[in-house]
Image: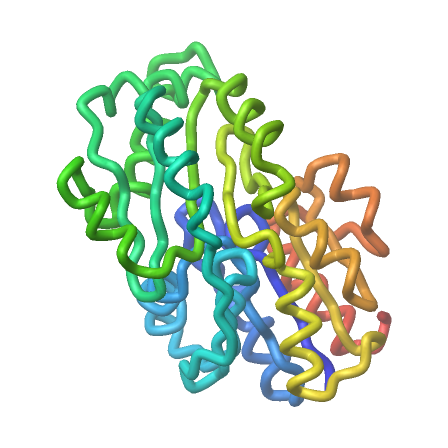
Length: 284
């Protein structure tokens, strides 16, 4: 049996955060030939289920929250690794001090911090990409849609959320010096990775996509040479290092490209479909 692990944003999904017709056909072609497809993403399982699995009638395993949770085809939770809460409050205090956009993921929900300076934050995020006002506004809308798709919480609700197990903290900000400070102070206490220039994703120190892939492939009894992984950014590095066939899309960062066996077309030119055809044609 073979299995293909794919990152979602900037790898499988298009700019509308949807699966293109070609990539969807590729997933279903793999499944029809008894090759498993698995999503491996920093997104929460509920987000993936609502926006992708249900929309496209897909019944496939999912590695969510960068590997903090592993779900089987039928939605059974196979494994979960929550954050150690000892230093979580310190991270949250930093986010509060600098008034950052951040999200907290529990087992079943993701919550985003409600901010008075939200528009200012979004403007500076948009400004990171361009000085053109229309591009800035489009960037602001994209960041808003990504984060405030989830319910927003206020001061009173933080303590209630912290009573639950947390699986990921995601921070997004133009203040790179704050992200660097968090990395420098807490990199030995948490797993930290980025899936974009302005974000930082924080998980349990024992969590990453690579660990989750090894666990799931052991569960399915799949040999390493039959494991494929495709990604684009730093939170895909451990995935690419542990699979028999590491593949990256053309838009991947230079750091990630160094780990690749093959570079396929970019996410917006259906690189995943290209990979699937190579596998089905026994080219790799």
